[in-house]
Image (cartoon, rainbow, N blue to C red; front, side, top):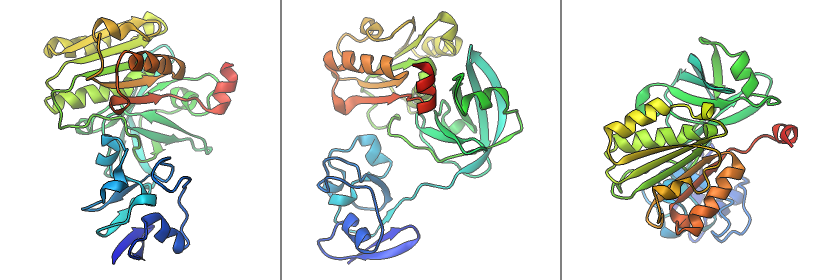
Length: 314
């Protein structure tokens, strides 16, 4: 008989019983729908030395690497701990600067140990109760957390960060989340990184993380801005491309929908990361997929505005 640890309590799992069934039998509720491993609504993260194959069937490699599994089809073969979201941590603003018009960079140092993978996102909590996810542009070896914040005029969090938050101030940030990050182990697979606006943030982290892991295959970075002023980090990216001959950087004014084609005529073997404004990202996704990219190698991270900001923009 195996033991399931959930929320600080141990539950004995009966033979033939799934993790989901065990937890429900003991009064715990997890989101679920199909209960057959198809919809993935119940997906959780866990700590265990061994999982049955069905528990991760169909999940992305990055999700599995981050402990992802499907409780509804997981009949544990060893003790398993379902990981609960970590409590928010306090982080101090150590740097703040303008990257481009209506785009602010802040760097934070957390007061306690903070685990993340380059390309993931965290949630910044406003003292009044609102919160907003922002992608990490830093890599763990930087020693700080870097966020690129696009200021939404009618937003609840971004204007506060841009206008009120000062260096030395402490913010409350959530644990890192997301499955769009570089996964070491295949240094010969080429990478296509396409970002719109502050969608560059996670891709900048992914690029640097890949190079730190000695990635050898071609890496193409396409950054699109509405105007040339929105193409921040040009010097840094040109410098990286100059130092690493297998890295190509392509700044684009306007939509990036087909700009990547000059560098990647056939994306079928490429791992593709797309990030930024939803419409541009989805249009690029369709174009990349139509050109041969596979869903298994396609990682999409659109920045979806809050309902309030979306209504203001419409």
